[in-house]
Length: 266
Image (tube, rainbow, N blue to C red; front, side, top):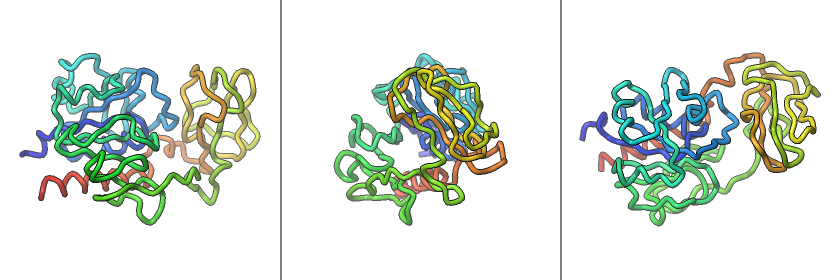
């Protein structure tokens, strides 16, 4: 099979899923993505799920377009763009018959993906068992095994520790202090000072613990639960950090590409 004709269906349009989609699209696979009706990505600068709200979303030169029917998918591919459709159950698999299905929801558990959904089924991160509910698992934990293709068993357990930036982990991340409506006037790429109010939830202020750039931030106007991740502050002065695919995500995407080529070249 010509690789340019190989159809890949990716469940999710979040940050990791988008990094995978970006690499596979640049490798000339026919990539299609599915999402929920109200995506909650915080790394919106590099998440194709933003196309669900805005119609289109560009990430490092690759553009995703929101489609509302399967008829539009081939047209979007002809335009060298990625179709993304609201389809939480990934029922598109029964229409597109993809050669590869990737569960990139990053829910830390399997939400319904099964081996047999496609000739090759790949699960990202914990919650999947290679050789049982999926064919292969790609490691997503930020460890020495990051990006490793697992043929039997599962990925490492989630550590719940945020990715370090200049030695900072938990201080970089913004969480909701209460349940309620999330509102912000800040944008990704904006500079903030330590102690500055970045957003509010149900009227309660959410302050940056460190100075830096807003790398990730939930879309304003979303109802959130207490403890929900709202965003990240990067201890940097470069606006571009919010719009660049992270090295960790590129490594995961490389693992996915390796898994696909392993399957095809057996």
